[in-house]
Image 1 (spheres, rainbow, N blue to C red):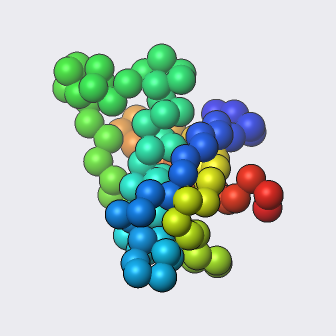
Image 2: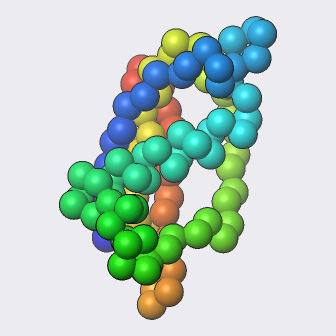
Length: 101
């Protein structure tokens, strides 16, 4: 477990927003998943490889706190870190920010 989070940048796509250009709340979970899978890939451990070995990482709990909405074409940074590991579970912590924040 590292104190330094993995960072992944992404850009909000049009289909993830409403007519006012605001990201729909459910899409934040997809952003977190993208950050998690990129972190694992960068560490040399892909989801696909784990699944081929019979290891799954189902999401058992998700808790989000929304502060300010993201908008169409904004760049976001997903910061992901592993904060706990047990014999049958891994706990991830995320922060989703704008680079200017």
